[in-house]
Image 1: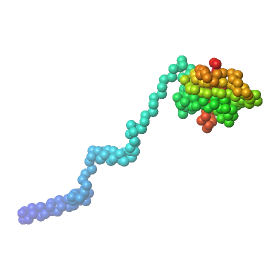
Image 2: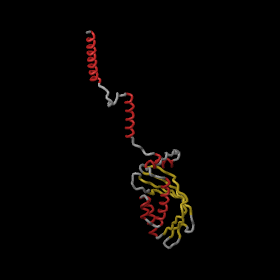
Image 3: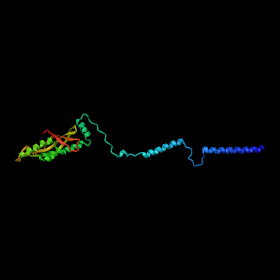
Image 4: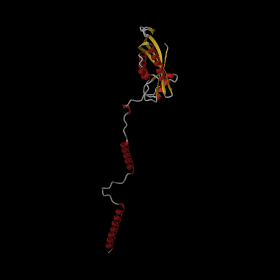
Length: 232
């Protein structure tokens, strides 16, 4: 009989063990080979960093290589003891497009046009290049010549030099004075063709100081002659 009781005890224990196993499966679940595995908190951080890096790369806009473009020229030092250099710098600040070399080249052209315009009584050309005050002075001289029948023969042989000797800002106006040293042939004839001044056969050196001005607020890029002075 004791053997039968032991047999039933084993069966009862086996049933209890089976019941406990079923309960544990319900609470903990079981691995069936399709689950993704237990989460690895360290791997999660690594993956997050990788994803963030990938996202950052997607959001980055590649800028062009600056070496493909010309670099800005460094600002040149200005000699504060040189009033012309200081004045030219002030003019460039007011008008960044101003270039001293180009200005001198343009002033030489204006010099020739004004001399020719004055000797040939070309009022239209003079009026476009002169200030009202300077134009009135030259127009009066032209009118006097025409009234008396005099003829001015003035030939520009060449310009030996042209140099900026003064530059400044006068309010909104850029003001530049150029010293011209030129070779000219000049003669004034009366109504009968007689020479009353100068020599048509002599080349003389002439030194002039011409002052030009331009309103930096104006859209007109041209400069106007506002004053003249001569050593001859």
